[in-house]
Length: 305
Ligand SMILES: Nc1ncnc2c1ncn2[C@@H]1O[C@H](COP(=O)(O)OP(=O)(O)OP(=O)(O)O)[C@@H](O)[C@H]1O
Image (cartoon, rainbow, N blue to C red; front, top):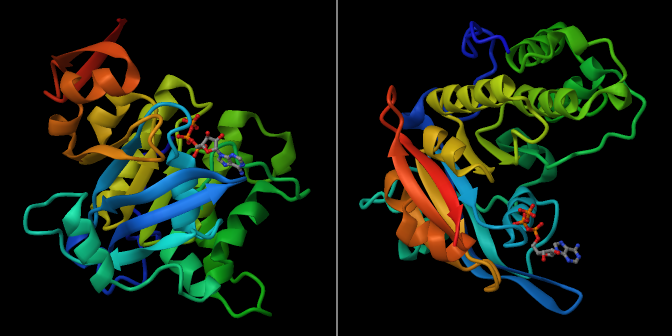
């Protein structure tokens, strides 16, 4: 993936935040979000906060509701209750969950009440294994990310093309621009969906397993890109399975427990959350936390109980 690219000079940083960098960033607070399907309660009054201009990992075993929460926050599904709001400065205690989340959401702008186009300028979502049935080229698929930024009847401008190509460049997919999207491999498609989200110039980026299908170098490049975006003032909430990748990349982590309709068991800085006391009972494993010899960040290894 190309890492020499500067989002600010190419105009890929968010446009609507009133300034670049974390100081002008908007965070996200989901408060008491509730959702049922087929008579089964999937999320029961879940509070999750993604602090402004930070990378927050949404963690938890299979089926704990990570994708569902992201889909509700993105407006793909309607919650049965609760609120999703943009928030400003971090809370006094820096806590990304709990009572402070409720207060922040109560104060901030309601994302789900925004008109669709405005919401699409604010928030971009890369779904897990997002399929694209349309017989379109990769470049056209990425240009769709520019739709919320122009009037309904207008076609893409030169600037839109430039931004779309810059987004493809940044996700390492520039050479795929002319390909039909349906012919791509899983990893190639993942990069294209990420590029479409970047072309949207969102203030908040929601990612569901962004490293799915990617080889190890592409995983690292993606998470580096995620960190760079946060540096540009984009708030990132990413569902992740690889806890070491989360420890290496995220500022904050939120852990959902199995069997309790999305109950948040821990939320806070990764070094405090990614510890055996939290991970072992949630995942049913025995965790050892090592230190990365170069970065000093936690590296997690696991044994069966
Ligand atoms: N449309 C639906 N109909 C029925 N059940 C659903 C639906 N959407 C989600 N669920 C159920 O809700 C629960 C949470 O699913 P979700 O996909 O959000 O979990 P997840 O934490 O993202 O899982 P994974 O890590 O496996 O991707 C699961 O038990 C799933 O089967």
